[in-house]
Image 1 (cartoon, rainbow, N blue to C red):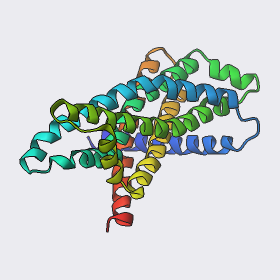
Image 2: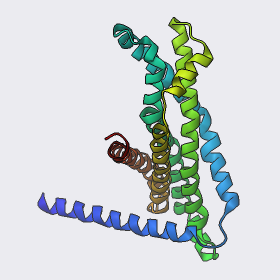
Image 3: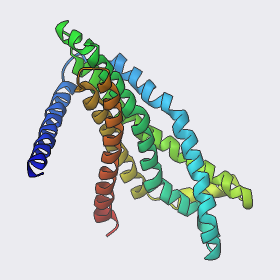
Image 4: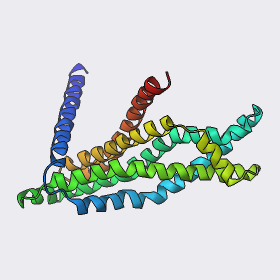
Length: 258
C-alpha cells in the first residue's frame, strides 16, 4: 500500500511538472512572431458564438428558477420587494460566472481535448512539427486565448439573460414593470460586484482552455485516449473552476468586504 501511494505521488508530481513545462511553452509562444490571427478569430467564433445558445438557455432557466425558489421565503419575511436585488447580486457575483464556466467546461474543454487528442492520435501534430510549423502557437495559444476572452463575454451575456428570466418569472405571480425591475437590479449593484466576477471569469476561461489543450496535446497513442482526454479535460477543468472560485471569493472578501 505504501509503495502504491509513493508511486501515485510520483506520478502526480510528474504531471505537475509536465503542466508547468506546458505552461512555459504556451507563455513563450504568445510573444513569438507570426501570431495566427485567423485561427484565433475562428476559435472565438467556435467557442463563443456556438456556445451562446446553450449559455443563454441555461441562464434564462436559472434566473426563472431562482426567483421561483426565493419568492416564498422572501414573502414570509415581508421582503418580496427585495427579490430583484437578491437575484441581481447573487447571479452577478457567483451563480452566473460559475454555472456558465461549468457549461463551458463541459462543452469547450471536452471539444478541445477530443480535437487535439484525435490530431495527436492521427499524428497530425507530428506532421506539423516535421513540416516546420509551430503546433503550439497554432493549436494551443489560439485556443487558450480564445477561451480566456470568450468566457467573460459569455458570462456578461448570460447574466443579462438570467436577469431577464427572473423578470418573466416574477411576472407570473406579480405585476412589475420592466423598467422598474431592471432599475432595482442595477441600483443594487456596485462596481465591486462586477469587477471580481469579471476578473475570475478570465481565469475560468484560461483554466478551461489550458486543461483542454494540455489533455488533448499530451494524450497517448490509440483511439481510446481521445475519449479519456475529453473526459479528463471536463473533470479537471470543473475542479479548477471551483478552486479558482474559492480563492477569488476569499481574496475579494479580504480586499473589499472587510
